[in-house]
Image (tube, rainbow, N blue to C red):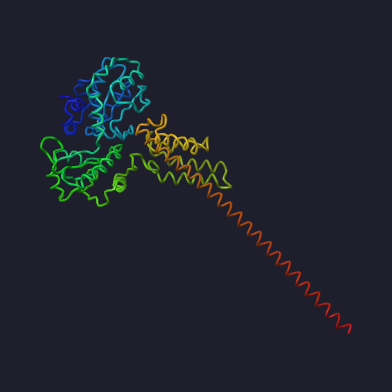
Length: 466
């Protein structure tokens, strides 16, 4: 039996269903005819991290159009480098079937290509952000390893320009009666639009639905799907009538949300505008996507750590604070950030910033300015920043958000300290003024009493003389 990636190449129309049924491949499976190593959580470390052999690994999902387009390219790439299997590996991971492995390497969109340098358990991992044609991929491997192969540009018909464009046209998962249960009821959040080909409102919704799917495509735990009830999504005569009947769909479009591990439908009752749909998905899936597919301003921040950051800066700004006070505040902050050992987690970056602050109090502000400039340049399409891969952009945005938490906490602490100093100064000035006024009043009273006493004495003396 052919392994999953070969089946994905040879039978793209049936790939999603076949891969769903046969996802338990390992290195003991029959070898791929292309030479691609199909990895699982149980085989990954031995094959990639402990082999001391550099590797280019694709994390893919069977239902992903881009992955299906890349499949024959990846197979050919592995075949070209098969003669040098002791010097470089071309491998693949079904990230949909092995989500814990994908999460371990921060895979958020498909396909994600990562280079492992073969240095062992602490191997450096680099995201591949170049073009996905055979020439570019082969050149990348050659640059990294020195292993050269001849790669004719005409080797693959799949390299024709229209094919990638067609694959990129839609990120909506098209479901029917046969494939619905393979998507709904798993570990992902699924928002489904039940549509009909003749429905004008469905056609009006279509561009928004496509944009919604594209904006959430970096989130592997979110699926934006549609069931065209009178359609033939699979090409074999299966529409969505049975599924629509099961969920009592009587009007179109009808939007239903399915939570992970549940086939119970929850109705979507909000407006069909993109901001409202994005807000709904973010609230239910715990994501932080913004229009355009980027992350919002709070993605990656952790409330309890932000409170500790605020306490740290307040401790720094106390007039009587000494180095011991500041050290204790920094240690308390660092202790809170130790519960997640993963170097890919936001908590890890909090720890990095905390460590930098111990030696460089201005690190957060300076690094924030640098990352913001890089992200702004990417948005404007300037220089190197314009080439940021989506995963890298997300990573930088999370770091920017965390650094902003530090910078804002420092700014608030400075403002609070300044307001407190101003209030104390005003109170002192008021007390001094009141004291001066009281002293003046007392002096005036004493003078008046003295004057009155003197005047009274003179009167008595006048009487005696008469």
